[in-house]
Length: 501
Image 1 (tube, rainbow, N blue to C red):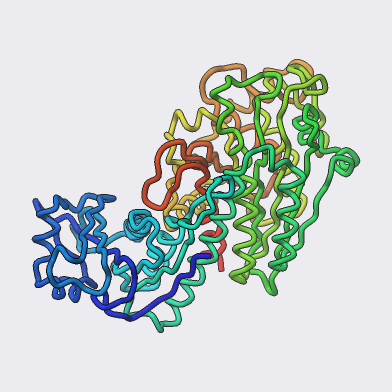
Image 2: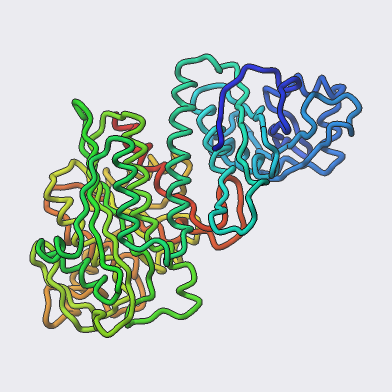
């Protein structure tokens, strides 16, 4: 297990396998930020010259390694890893730049067992950013590797700061560790092959975590779902031999300042059902449960941190498979609460399981409902693979969530829900209350949001996060983001709860 600590040790004398520093772009050259003075002195005051000679430009994410013997008078650490921080025209570095630099640095350290971070950490927020980046960047998923994993031992991380004994800095470190562990758990779930993570196993993992951290967890199996009238979840899951689940997590502290409800899409594998996806389109569909994973992970993290916010979460889990018992295009489902939906595309299934869960979440009468879902390819077309779309029935609530995402370092952009989208969904079905698609090839993310909004009770603020892009990284790692599951939205939800307290 990776451990992380704070230390006031001098960067030039700290005992570690590697030290990570930042390099700031300045005009046509580079400069060193505060906290590197002793290292520069240890290297004869020529560290900038050496880094420049090795090609360092200060560009964000750039890595320059300096072996200790190269400078003749090295510190005790055998490897110096300089990470570009970009330009800081006003002299202030953004916390997200520090978070990304720490992640880049720890990845560059590879199998080094101990890594110290001499990145700027003048306040608690910067301490948290460096710690989060280091921990998230250290993540590896080796459960299915045939090697013994001897080179994958996480080791020890140290954040060097003058605030090492400061109360706020210690609290920031704790929050970073708890949040990063939640992100790692979500990544593990998303990366697990779908043959090993069906709804039943996913639900059992939630139960286990709930018992460990004092969160109440209730699981509705297929019989309870049928008795309760959860037609959306059952309809999506009826084609699979692995039955669906609805998991409810409840964290209720003393004197909560607000009540948040989280709802997550948990399609453990999405073949598209009878509206079958292409073979390449299915490859990453083990990640279609990333929304449910995020809300479970965030709920556990909020409970571990003891934040004074009541949280009720619903993870709607199903496997969307084609078979003789699968839902057919033109089938009509009766959702929880009685509304009927004509299924005109079985690959638009996430909104069906979420519809049930949103009605159920509304019954708890929370102050705000936030759903997280890898819902539409259309959102990826609109915003790319790094940015989530944020929708809502109230601009103020939506903007609160976007602000929390920005503060947490997760990219998010507000999008509208045009009123005509719901009209199109209603008119597109001739036999049910509404269809699950509009029948048009454009505005798919907007239509999906309009569908979901119709299942939220009047008078309750609701925000929908379409995380189809950033929840899974098909490309190479960068910063603190690995290939595969990213754990997106955990930090946003934790930040939202923390800011509410």
